[in-house]
Image (cartoon, one colour):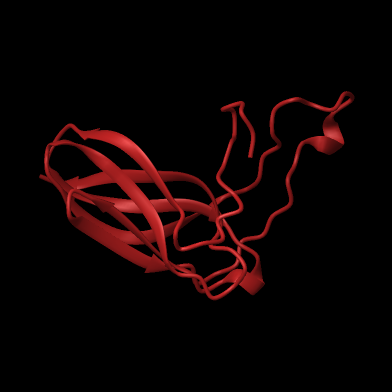
Length: 130
C-alpha cells in the first residue's frame, strides 16, 4: 500500500499465482497458533489461504467480511506522504508445527471465488507449546 512502514499492507492480491514470502528463522521448535490480520469486502469472502514453512502447512477460509475505510485523511491538514491505516481483524488459521531453523514462510491463496483474496497487514505466530 505504501513504501513507508508505519502501517503498510498488501493489496491487489488477485491471483493464485501470487504469494507473499518472508525469509525467517524459527528460534525454537514447537506448535504455533497462526493469525493473519486482514480486510475483505463482502463480495470477496470465501478465499482459502495457506501458510507454509519447510513442508509444514496450515490453511483456512476467509469466512467473514471486514471492510473498514482507510482512516486518517480527515484529520490531515496536509496530504500525508505515508499510507493511511485501516482496522485489520485477525483471521485464525489454526496451528502449525515448526522446527528450529530457517526457511521461507509463504502465504498463498488456494482458491479465490471473488475478485481478490484480501488485503493483508501481518501474520502473527504465537508459540503455544514446546
